[in-house]
Every structure is written in structure tokens, then in C-alpha cells.
Amino acid sequence: MNPDLQPGYDCVAEHYATEFFEELNRKPFDRQLLDQFAESVSGAGPVCELGCGPGQVARYLKDRGVDIRGIDLSAQMVRVAARLNPDIPFAQGNMLALQLPDKSLAAIVLFYSIIHIQREQVTRAFREMSRVLIPGGKLFLSFHGGKGEIHRDEWYGERVSIDFRLFQGIEMAGYLEAAGFHEVNILERDPYEFEHPTKRIYMFASNAL
Image: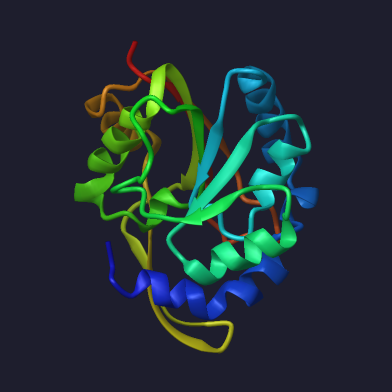
């Protein structure tokens, strides 16, 4: 993982929250999938959002009865999320080395956070998620579709060094299956007019039994 990722998001956390905290209001497809996910994990146990940012997805799920908490690499983003969502627990952490016990989560959700993991480390990240999920636990992720990477050295007027990786659905399915996930389901949509112009890909998977 790029060592500049955490300080970069620390720098832009407030700006990012201002732009994205209400974003789901304009994304009916995402809300529909999150509603389905919330129903599928209702009463199953604790759920964690990895790469939670300011907590907009965690907020949406919490309001639909999910026992949700959030983890983010950026300490400043965690502080912003806690301020905006005082009824949801948030903590700093790294999805490549989660400070969580084995089989402690019923489900994990990742919205546009796997894009910061280097390709050669994606399977490792999913294996770590498999470790902390119960057998048959659910995984729901989204990411930008495509090939290659996008690099930012400036964001909201701040100097950063952040890489965003684009993935193909079939590529990501391979990483999931290599980590022991199965029942992989892929959905796609075109970007909304206000979004970065990349296809959006959503994937559901189940942990090994």
C-alpha cells in the first residue's frame, strides 16, 4: 500500500466529507443494493465497513437496522466519521492487517476502498477479510471498472500522492475466489452524470463454509 495514502486522506478528510457524505441521495441504484444487503444481514451479527471514509455508507446501513461499525486507514477520516455519526463506532485500521478476532463479523462492506490496494495485495486483503468473517459471511464491495491506475498529486487544493486502481469484474472475481470466497455475483452500472466517468462495478460474495 502506498505510504502516502494515509497522510493524503488525512489532508482532504473534511473536504471529502463535504462532497460525499450526502452522495447516496443521488444514487438510487446504490441505495437499492444497500437495501438488499441490509435485509440480507439483518440480525446476523456485527457488520464492518472497511475504508469507511466519513461514514455515509455506514450511516445508511445503520438507519436500516444493521449492526454496523467502520474502519478507515486515515485517522482524520475516522474523526470526521465519528463526529458525523456519533452513534456508530469507528476505528483506524488497515484492511491488510485487521485488528479483529477470527470469525468475528457477519459481513463486510467496501465502497470504493479496494481501489487503493495494489493488485498483488488484493488477494491478501480478501484473505484477511475471510479470516474475520464467520463461515458463510457476506462480502459486498464496489469499485471503479477499467484497467490501469489514476494518480492524484493534488486534491481539493492539497498536495497528495494517491493512486486509484481500476479493475475488471472478472479480475476481481478471481481475487475473491483465490481467497476462498464463492457465490460471486457481479453487477454493473454506467456512471451518473455527476460522477467520475468510469463504469461502477458491484460484487457480492460469500465466505467459505
